[in-house]
Length: 336
Length: 253
Ligand SMILES: Nc1ncnc2c1ncn2[C@@H]1O[C@H](COP(=O)(O)OP(=O)(O)OP(=O)(O)O)[C@@H](O)[C@H]1O
Ligand SMILES: [Mg+2]
Image (cartoon, rainbow over all chains, first blue to last red; front, side, top):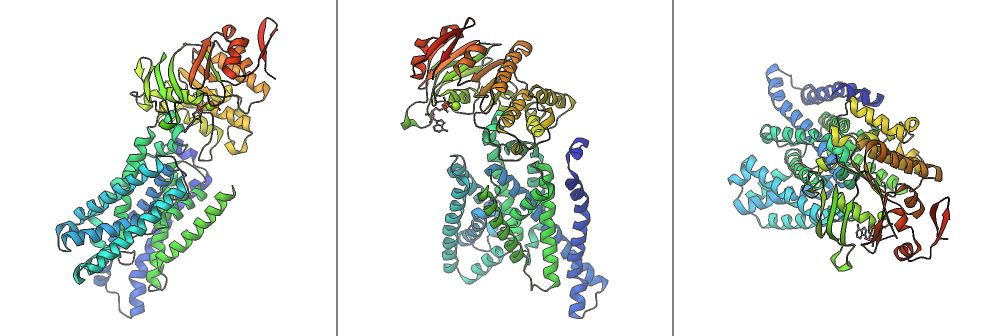
């Protein structure tokens, strides 16, 4: 960050800038501790260096995957809110996760669970991302560009879409044979607990690329947050930028979903927490803040879950907190 | 130079035309006042020229180039447009708003020269003391002036102001019009301004363009335009023209 942009951060921003890295380290330590020593003492096994190494070998990629996926979810959600001009929406509310389930189901149904299309992470990812891109383009063309009453229409669109897709893929899963069914189940019931660790390394560059592409546009997003017409008269080609952003959002959501499953409220919670904390509208601090908050939430939640042997499912907690927060936002916005 | 040829526009093809066969050349380094009743199509015309509203047919040439072909970023260095309704999705300060006016020039990375333009614009609009205030903590007129400061910071040769006197009291309205005159006289800008008060148009504009039902009814110098005949036709209202201090004033109540 340049000197001028540091100067622009308020006291809260600076505090957050310095508090972020140590907090991240602390929750990572908690996560690793709960997967190694806490677990071994609970099970009464001695933690040998060799065992430690082998667990770390699995825990570190999982940690990296969680952090990057959480950060990506937050970044994508913030951009989505800017493009839709709403603080209440995140892409996962529009049924993106059911698009993911449907593509997995269809891939297995059409090509078989042993086919390259399904088993090759890249091919599989490209198909899922392609489908999400198609859906988001449809959504954008049908709802956003017409300048309708965005929020209600988008939520309805998401509701109808995920209803149709869910019952459709449910039906296909019923008529599949047992092996295919199990594979689809394994691919679509990814959660933070059973992350799809095989694909972390292959998709890491994709996630970093998408995050970087969105982060680099932060100045454009600042202008876009003024509204489409203001942005256009300040020289931002709004429609093109919105289309590019939606492509990147769909691509980002599909990787994050493939990796850690759907966390409906993680994006909403972290983006709005960053807004409240940093009290700014500028996207660069908001990107960084919400990415850090999302990683903190996910890693600390997962650490606690491991510590408590899954008595406390992270997704449920994040969704509960996110859901209550959304309620609060709706009530507050309605009063204004 | 802005030249408009054969412009037609319709928001909804079934609903008829909003703009009909508009031909107009906007005079350089002058104040052009656009007048007309509510719904006459004034804002739409400005929107089409600024390439925010899409026309059905016809062309708008900005310095000889079709506005629909100019890159948005290049157009924003030539033409600044103050909209009629000023609403922002976000909460920002007066200074931050003015800073956005520099976006076309600095891409969001203001340098010292940009900061000077921002300071100048705020001073021009007498907002220096309020620069740290959030827009939602201002009165309607102060907010209006903050948006105009953004337009001034954009520092373009062409400036379009859609009803900039909204929310301004009499004193600030007169000051605003004097600022507009100074922009033309001192900085050589070309200003198009939508006004509802015909007397303001008569007193401060070099050209008056009157619109009605999507067409240009008549166009001319204030002396030619401030006549009972023209005004009655444009506004469908019974005007009385009086003389005061050698200037024509219209009474409409
Ligand atoms: N976004 C829109 N969609 C559909 N119709 C519109 C839209 N904006 C304006 N119109 C219609 O186009 C016509 C011209 O509107 P416009 O805003 O250009 O008028 P105006 O001369 O600026 O009026 P005012 O003095 O009230 O600002 C009106 O009949 C209006 O109803
Ligand atoms: Mg208007």
